[in-house]
Amino acid sequence: MNEPIHTTPTDDALLRVRDIAPEGFDPAEDEEEAGLYEHFAVTADKGQTPMRLDKFLTVRMEHCSRNRIQAAADSGNILVNDRPAKSSYKVKPLDRIRIVMPYPRRETELLPENIPLDIPYEDDDLLIVNKPAGMVVHPGVGNYTGTLVNALMYHLQGSDIVSDNEMRAGLVHRIDKNTSGLLVIAKNEQVHARLAKQFFDHTISRRYVALVWGNFDEDEGTITGNIGRSPKDRQKMYVFADGSDGKHAVTHWRVLKRYGYVTLIECRLETGRTHQIRVHMSWQGHPLFNDERYGGDRILKGTTFAKYRQFVENCFAVMPRHALHARSLGFEHPVTHREVSFESELPADFRALLDKWDTYTAASKELGEE
Image (cartoon, rainbow, N blue to C red):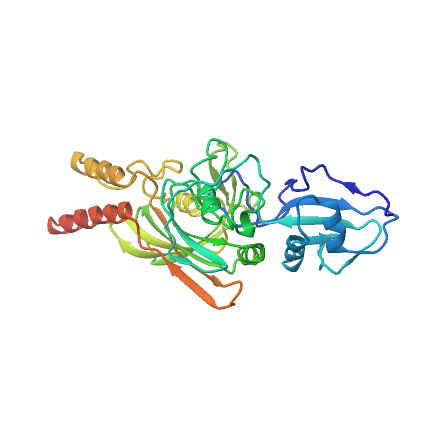
């Protein structure tokens, strides 16, 4: 019989201990990409006899199938002495073994909810969801019902990805509650692991459309600045320009249309930090239009005339959220290995907002105003 083993405290071996990945995400955040969480850790005793890694873990982890363990190993999510190991690896005495998965542990019981979803594409392995503004993606404090995860648990009932009632339902990445647009969802463990790896490696293409305050001297550019929690306001993110803190973040932008006081831009994410576009643009003096958290819900550019102030207030009313839409996703299909891409049209509130600015700028030109 094998000697006893030493484990970290777990609740059925699925406890998030800490975020160990440099590109990880915090489950308390809104917009983030998949990182790796330590779900289980064990150190083999000094008397441990050689045993296949998958068998070793299956024996010691409750409610975790050998297939799931093998999928994690195939995706490089099982580390032995901090190095990825395959299922066939033979566990040796004093080996430090960790399973790291691209989702946090479940914090509360979740129930499937029959919430309608806009699904522009679906196959046997994944689906694309066009999330409306106002829907919370991931359950959290105060939002344990009505979320995208609740809806996905209903839509994916019977699939492996929700069989254990984990709080992810195929979720690989997220966008803010008040950001609209595209998300890719995995329908099985293998696809989930492979998509998470693409996010982790920054090989997935994501493009957003945003309306921001102010004009730009250039037609395109790149913003590089570490992003972390604000030392003054824990509800906000902050750019550490000197690189002393936070995580590396890069946003590429280009102008789509100039309105004078505001500008429509496209942003391409090279990294996926919490509130990345919102905080990067604010840091550069171009907060997103009507972004209350980062100062875009005030009149930052334009005239002092009452008529203009009323016009901007009307714009805020038309789109009572920050002007950001996740327009496109492109990645390698994890099963067919073909490059796929998906696009989403601007939602009605965003189109209505742009229509107002189109009308305003056209009228201003007729009057000879800038």
